[in-house]
Length: 227
Image 1 (cartoon, helix red, strand yellow):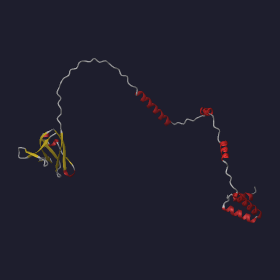
Image 2 (tube, rainbow, N blue to C red):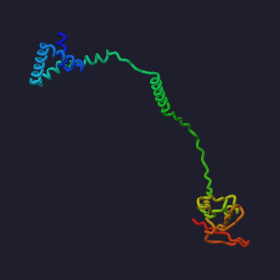
Image 3 (spheres, rainbow, N blue to C red):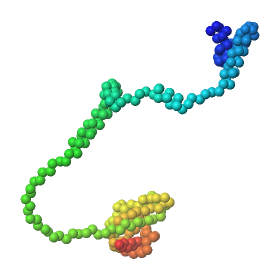
Image 4 (cartoon, rainbow, N blue to C red):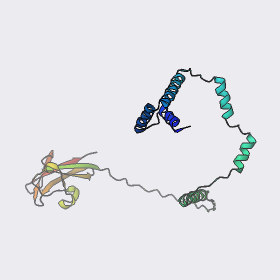
């Protein structure tokens, strides 16, 4: 193929750059013979585009697939290939260590899971003596909550029959709003008590329903505890 024919072929295939197309058109315009050959090839391409396209039949496609498909090996050939085909074992140090740890853990579990041998030792039984003794049951207790409103107090405690009138044994805790509270366990009975504010001021419980004189002119609050 000459150089002008190659140029025409590349033009028809749209394979020329813009600069090469300009050179081609200038060459065709200067060479009448080349221009006629180019026009003839353009007509051939146009007529070829109008030709009907034939679709291959289904039978032809199936025969083509059958001829291109690889033959199915027999079962003996598959077994022989599985036995004789070399394989590459991929492993790394971390994987080997992990596998060894798994095996060691499994063996350790198997060893520890074995039932221990039980040895029965005969023991001479001696007659036992039963001593009847009365069991003393603990007296029930009731949790009592004491509340005193003293926003200006620095400390509040309670003293009464239940703690030997010692305020240091039962301090109250301060909460929001200057409310002082304490929860104490008491056995059923009747108790007298008083609150001690800042360690020096003794006052009766303003919420108590009963009161009794202490013999010195003051009133003690009275608390009745029932089950």
